[in-house]
Structure formats: structure tokens, C-alpha cells
Image (cartoon, rainbow, N blue to C red):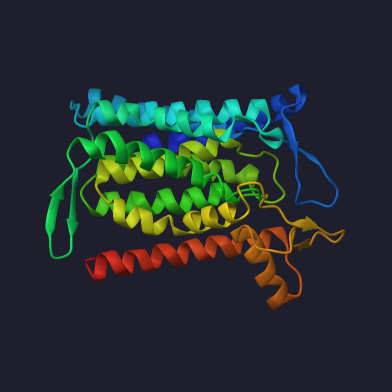
Length: 334
């Protein structure tokens, strides 16, 4: 029904109108970070993802209001509140990391991982998901409580932390979030979970508004307060909608990025080395990020690699992965 567009529109306009005030306030109090892919280093407002989470949560709450008072139903209310609670916990972890200074270490890797595991507790306690897997030649196997107590925490914490790896370029994280959550929203709709699709679209809408200010040249950075919740939301949607396989396939760029980061012992950064003309050079002799691969590829093809082109190339790769994901899992019924 047309009235269900209200939560999506609300999420967009909350972010669009509040974010400029956040940018001013963040600069005033010194919550700003250097744009490391620019030759002339400029300070950019940080942790703007907090406003995205605000827009998303208020959009979801407006959807709950419509379900309760207009449609007079409370179906999936428990699942929705568990989802939003997990997202808020992840946002809290990310914001803490931002305020402690991610550039100087922030929270320890172990503590961040533990806190992201805690974010899965709202899902575990209500026993969400479908603890059955299908194996070739064997058939369906029930994982029982192992699914809730082990696989859900691994899924949420793993997606939250690995999505955070593919970052560092203007608009990159927001665009990746739009593509991934948007694709999963379509999967949710096609598989009969329209309520989950609408929640995903609230995040997509909020991210579009954020991208207006985060695209090159960025006026605001998302911070971990946004990247952790987006990664977590991807896992949560997959769990609630029972489409973990296609979600993992869509997540392939982030998985590749994780292996590249492990190659650098989680110490190498994703940034490029800026030139005076705004182009980028590889920051290292070896490849430690998809961003580095994009810079290398663009230099071979065009002679120079610019930040906007790097971001567009990675988005294109993500779109291709999503396209082949739909092809494999929809047409071939994998």
C-alpha cells in the first residue's frame, strides 16, 4: 500500500535535513578527520553515520506505528525490535571506536569482536532464523540450538567487522551499503518477507540522503558508527529472511577485502597515495585492499587513478556480483 512509503521517505528526510547541522557541530567540537586521499589534507566532519542510524530507527518506528494503529497487526514486531536493538548496539560499538580514535587504535580488535558478538544477543534470545541446512546427497540437517548460540553470533559479528574493512574513500561505504541492503531488500520481497524488505529500504533511503554529503568531495565521513550497523544489518536480514546463501554471495567483495587485510596482518590501510593533481598512487608495493587493485587497474587502463573512479569501479564490481548472485540463485535454483 502507498502509505508504507512513509517510513522510507521519513528516513531520507531526517538524514537529509539533520546531517548539515551535525557537520557544523562536529567541526566545531573537533570531531573531524583528515581526508587522507587528498594531496592537500582537509578536515572532514566525522561519525556522520550516527544521523543515518537515527533516520533508520525513526523510519522503522514509524513503520511499527502504522502496523499497530493503521493495519491493527503486530506481526513480526518482536523480530523488528530485536533487529533494531542489535543495530543500536553495533552503532554504540562503532561510535565508541570513533570517539577513542580509530586512527590511533581505538578499541582493541578483540574487544570490538566481543562487543559485536553481544550485538547478536537480541536475535539469539528470541530464537530467530531457520536452523536447517540442505546438503547434497544428504538432504536437510537440523542444527538445533547450535544455530542460535554459535552461527548467529558468528554471522552478525563477522559481517559487522568485515564490512568495515572495505572503506576509506569518499562515498564508498554508503554506496556499498545501498547496493547490498537494496539487493537483500529485493530478495526479501521476492521470498515473501515484505516487512523485512521495507525495513531494508528504510536503511537504503537513509544512506541515499547521507551519500549527498558523503560523495566526492566528502563533507562528512560515516565512521564505524555506520559501517558496523550496516554489516550487522546485512547478516540480520539474511538470518530473518532465511536467505543466508545469496547474502554470503553478495558479500563476496567484503570477503575478498578481508583476506587482503589478513594478508597485511590487519595493519595495512586501504588508502591510496595522493598526487598533486588529485590522482592516486598505490600506497604499498603489494596489494592489501580492493581499493589498491582498483588503483592499479585504473592506472593500467587510463594512466591515472582518481578517487571517484576507484569508488565507481568497486561499485561496478559489487553490482556484477549481485547480478551473478541473482542469476545463480534464482535462475539455476542453487
